[in-house]
Length: 79
Image (cartoon, rainbow, N blue to C red; front, side, top):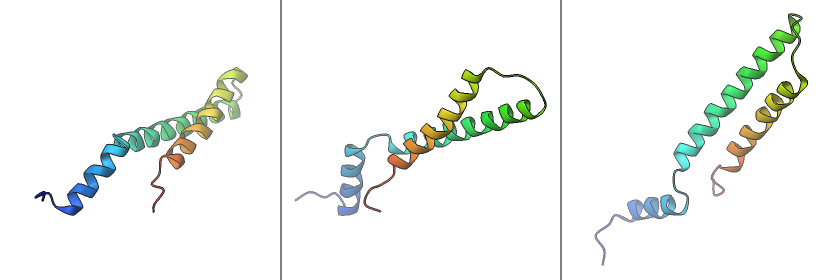
């Protein structure tokens, strides 16, 4: 009845069930990279002898755990 290609219809249905999945994945990757880069910078400051607040280090470590976890949980379950 409809003139829509079955592959296109499948893709559109998938997108309607999980909108902005590509954007979310891109953001999780960017946030993960930023968190790991921040942690490397903080660890290099600690190694050089500078003092850092413990709260800042814990926040950075938490971000390094949370963002990759969100990326992992946002993957396709059917693949």
